[in-house]
Length: 423
Ligand code: GDP
Ligand code: IMO
Ligand code: MG
Image 1 (cartoon, rainbow, N blue to C red):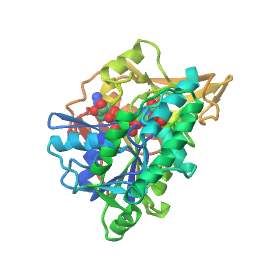
Image 2 (image 1 turned 60 degrees about the horizontal axis):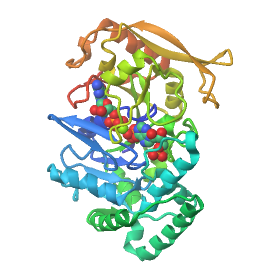
Image 3 (image 1 turned 90 degrees about the horizontal axis):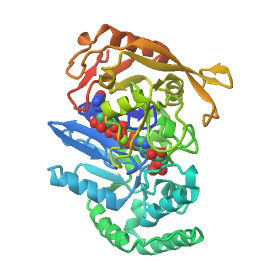
């Protein structure tokens, strides 16, 4: 068997959590392979709403195995809060959830460093989620990180050395902080974490594949936030792309199966950084209002704009997407016309290739199509799709050269239309 990957093609928040939950019944194992509690994945079913941050979105469907892979960065305290909230609502994860010993730990001082670096950047700040993601991956790459497996041997010594190093940096930045309370809670959370199965996940996952078990890997963030191919430096600190699944799980590229690329029928971004199709007018506010475009965890206002096919094609290329999933189509239900950016004008020249420099001077070139003006939220099958919506889908499939397999018409698990099933 191979690992199917589901990942975001835009700037995150495409609706990954919802679709992973919908697809989970088809899989034996669900994994996360990068990112950490910077993610906020929302699931809605039976009138309940859950937001997951470090825990895979496969935990709600019938006792499947869920794995937090080596590429993830884990904050034990946020993890405890997330898992305890789930336990309180009747979802005890201790038997279902395994954590890689090679996943890196987010220390209390990583969170402080994240804030200190942002403060030092002033108006050039990235607008991070403040969860210590950048500093933790920095320590991983500079070979100073602490891993989940380190909890099992001489942890206090390793922790003290890391903390001393971080404190020296914070002193050099003249950054004031007090971690006494946070640190005490964090240490308590380590004991909580140890109740879970801490595993060599690369072996476990490859063994599952050998046994014929099916595995779904759930991306976090989105391709345009990838450390290599996103809108650098306004990106996150991990490889959010398909290749990140190989390094973040220990799976060979030859063992990647379907690559599901998920996108919204429009586009959003949270935090700073370039966004060529951003709308600053009433249309942007209307999308934000109808789409409830506010951060799942932070509540931050998301910036909104029309769909950007230049960026989408780039993301499809980088990831080798085999199937597309379009989310939040219903949000455009009440628009007379909808627009799609098909090219960028850079210094007067048109290009359809995503350029190196996207920080300034990009003018989107749009096509405008008739809207569908029909409430799609109760539709059950594509036979009910209005003609204009079918035309929109055909246009996107032609431009993107990949079929749109799933269309989502609302936040609930049930509001999902699978357009065709596998041969
Ligand atoms: P993720 O980070 O990719 O999992 O996405 P988020 O959970 O951060 O953001 C997606 C938001 O859109 C959540 O509030 C979902 O409940 C909601 N959502 C998902 N699919 C749809 C849809 O098809 N229509 C509408 N209206 N909302 C949706
Ligand atoms: P999900 O998985 C949207 C953004 C932050 C910031 C930049 C860097 O829910 O789609 P970081 O804290 O990672 O160092 O922040 O990346 N960002 C996200 N935006 N969805 C996310 O996750 C994000 N995770 C990080 O807003 O601009
Ligand atoms: Mg999100």
